[in-house]
Image: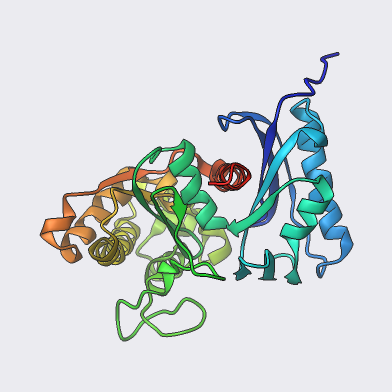
Length: 329
């Protein structure tokens, strides 16, 4: 049996987003020592939910051969609107949570500094800290998925408001008609170019007989038309689906081009399921979209990169933020 090294400090990165939660134990260099992934369960913010988070962290510590008294800091990437000053999750629909003081809970439970952040901000900070944008001065991240999330890191700091997160790039209005991001104006980037929007257009194409392979493998059921399904459809010659994805990627590029005009990032990081499933096709058409909207003087000053950390990005960024806070930076 291995023995615990009592003097070794560790940092915990926790990802509370999506249908699964994940706790990861890192050393000071953000090397993974252990992790634990479990299904997320809605429970109306009862103590059972917080206990489940505690258990997941404790199980990750066991895998890392570490103990709770070695924890130097805990960071949690969370979905939904947050109050960053109070460390409160204002609402997390996937959990049924409202007004949950997660930051204070984690700090008291593990007797160490704790911090919460938006899950997409955590993902971008993860790529800045240990991924494809390591050490860059300014990093813009855009993550097309079911929605479209974004984040910005400037000189080692996550860009956000006094109390709340920002960089809601999915709500950029690109047109005066078309889809919305679930609320707010129509013609938003998320309403036009998210994976959900793409899947809806793909289902129409399948119904019309324009995408025979997609119809064979997924029919017109939106829940079955995932990023990998779209990629397979394109590989098997469904040109209508390829054109839908190309158009959506260009629209994402339009939004990024506008953000480049404002932020002048050194690196633009693209992540999410669509990018992972078809990186070459997607990046090619994002570049076309960027070229249309970005000023020529700024369009060539950034590097466009694919995220490296995958589903570890948010946990990595949350741990890096906890490390930063614990060191007083």
